[in-house]
Length: 466
Image 1 (cartoon, one colour):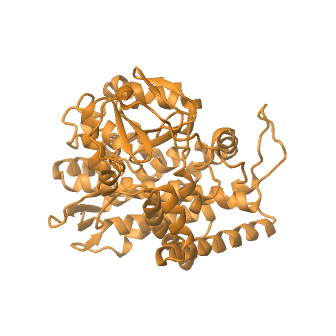
Image 2: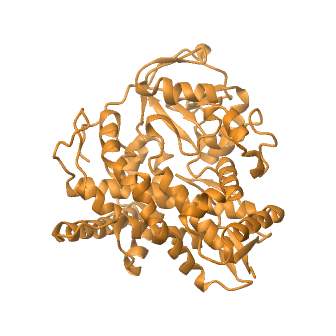
Image 3: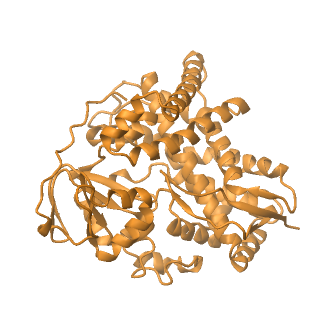
């Protein structure tokens, strides 16, 4: 979506003695190499310095925020003073000017345009598609088979999102779209971890990795623009999200339609954004949930007993979901331990006070869900998988930003309802027929890409139930 170029604040000049405590830093490079080597471990160690920590990934000044009250002060209280930073330019290489990368009033305008397409009544229409695709996908599985569950669930959610978003299920198009996004995820993560000047240089040079990414994006654009042209030429409105976007109109300040719809380029950017946000996060949520259940056999048995009691031998439906209490708790706990979007980050565009310290314009603020949601001050046995903790009383007493897998404030994930409905229907459908046993030779390690995928996939042995 066409928008004015963002002017970022200059790098702040501050007196180190006025900053919050933080890890030791090297001259010139600060802690840049420690972060690049292992960002999760680096931030875990940095968090031990306090609720507000100074990081120095040269040339940037970064504040790590580790307490729910301070996170709320950034996300809610001072949300008008922070926004997406220069790393957003990397995301634009794939998503263009879609909702994720939009800033300021552009973001609010686009959110209002997209919101009706993701209202509960509309997304519930896709429940049958989600369940039937999950049912058919497991048709090729066999008792005792060893599968890469990461690959299987990614392919399943890919097929579902292509169908619900684009209205197509052609195998070649699904394969091409999936390949483009898989390469883009890795490429964008690599570029985001590089200094801005190096990032721009490497993207412009005809390096093999950059060339492959540009070809993948061109392939993706060819598919999407062909689908858009097909919709433009069709007198019948479809039920997929692409058709809904093409029918949407911007609203004026009073909420009335301005009569202005989206251009083809704007539709392309929003659909790619919705795809990137929806397919990957749901797959990652399911992968870690299945892993945690598989490595806790007694909890997996409770999960299966609940499915047998509520659903029995029939297909899972939307009406079953409110009655699957333990499954809901297991998903909440998996999202706590392995949030698919594992950190929240912004740039200060205006100065403000936080935790007794002055945050200057141009500084970066990080609030990693992966750290906040494992804080032993708010979660007993914080590193253990304990779905039973998620009682109504526990949820009511938990500080707002001790748990925020879908973000919060004006930028809370707009597709949360779609993602959770999809995850629950898939989990219930697969769980009716299969138990899983994790391959003990595999040691899972969370990869800090854009999403928190397991390194080396997730090998599982399938055991047919009944």
